[in-house]
Image 1 (cartoon, rainbow, N blue to C red):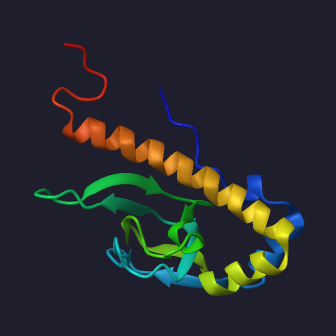
Image 2 (image 1 turned 30 degrees about the vertical axis):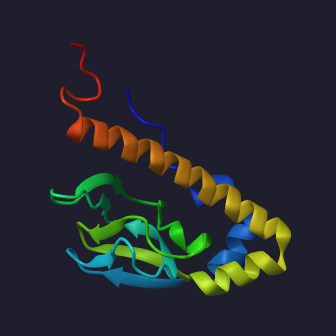
Length: 154
C-alpha cells in the first residue's frame, strides 16, 4: 500500500495566497550532504523543493538517526517554524543537490497574523503536512524497531 502524497502548497493554498507567499521566497541551491537543520535547533525558515531530495531524520537514543521520510519536488521542508517554540522536531539533510524556494519564517508568520484568511490557509496546509509526517514517522519507526516489523503477524 502506497502512502498518500504529502499535501502540496499548490493543491492546498488559493492562487492569491500562493502568489503572496512566493513574493517573499528566495531561490537557493543547497549542495548534496548539507544539513538544513538539526532536531532541537531554531526553526527560522522553511523550503519548498524545486529539484532534488531531502531526507528527514529523527534521533533515536542509542542508535543512529532514523530516516523518516524522503521529500522531493514541490514538497514542504520544515513545519516547526509555524508553532511555538519554533524549534525543529526532526533533522533534515540534502541527499542530492537541491534547488528550492526558501522562506523567512518570521516574515511569513507576520503575513499570516496580518491576514487571517492567509493564516488559515497556511495553517491548514502545514497542519495537513504535519499529520502526514506523523503517520510516516510512526510507520517508519515501527518498521525499524518493532520486533517483527509493522506488518508481521506472529
